[in-house]
Image (tube, rainbow, N blue to C red; front, top):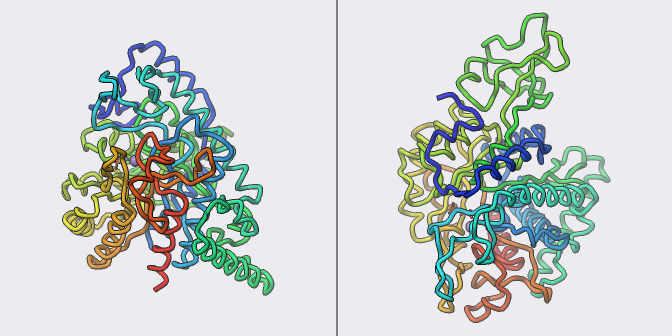
Length: 511
Ligand code: PEP
Ligand code: MN
């Protein structure tokens, strides 16, 4: 079947949102289609090439942020604390593993959630529709009817968040001269603080030395080179591509960035059916494969006229990276249909219910041309199930010869309810899944390329870290959970617990 941004509509939609007013939904769709892109093809292609480096083991992927963002949490303080934590975490990893870190935040668009149950019973006995994220309905039990206008709010909150992130990163926030701006001030543990300061001072010294001997140009930006941690850093956004009406409205057919356009040759059309090389040596698919592969459009004539033709692609311009959740990854379903056609690098959650053959089939559909950096598998089995499933999944993928990026999500298979009735996760169980994942990949002759985490640098009103996950160096207990439990979705590691995990990973790679 031919792909188009709306061809998903011919397939069953898992986790579909039912709107009562089709006319209002249509109005919102039309409006969204006229709004400018939030991210650009140039940025998306840059991430693809960074992810190709991740795939080949030359860089490590850190995918992290909230389970769900909320419109109310879109504040200067929250955004800078979140970015500060992602920068701190990545710096600790860079220091230990001595590899560049590609950072993708679950931020600037992570507003929609899948739910295991359509409705929920409130403590007062009322049965209401489940909260599906600010993109869909409200947390307030009286606002649970899906409202399409929320998609417009999601667009504007995403754009506002990314605007502030761009501002922060281009005005020195990521500079190693200011790591204290990364909200470390509230960290109470002197040991954590000292260890972190040792790293930033060590890195700053190393960079200063390189500058002194005139070698700083050779330091890659992710490591703090000329355009790196010192000044600007690369940072990418992501969300679960759940609301296909929203994703479709922000999908645009745009020209590939100039570096990926074929070199103009003679007066003959450039699209000839033979593989081409772009200016920076990236191999481009032939026109034969581009007609098979929906993400890359056929050549269109240049808007500037003349013989030169341009390659185009369908870009989801709402985020750099999107993933398919564990509940919406059906091979014959609408989400897989939509995702197979976009040019963005994408992820798929892989849980215990994935059959190994189904996994291979899914990879073939989502990355038929075996493009490096295109597809990330985010595994999330649970610490006590990973042994049973990961080796089979690795073997199936290896047997197929398909290239993928392997990322460990140690959060989603490890959720439990505390004796006080709060949804939580245990730090030790999270560490256990990461440790097993690292070991199993080695045992299977494979490589773990990154981690996907739910953590937050957000503080409570009284300036303390949130208390949503148990354990860590602060030994957060069940009784303490309710002190500053702020998540309305899954429990997140707080600032200190995240740094604990960063140091564990960093030390693992140092050995
Ligand atoms: C999530 O990442 O927040 C999520 C819902 O994950 P999964 O689809 O793996 O359950
Ligand atoms: Mn979650």
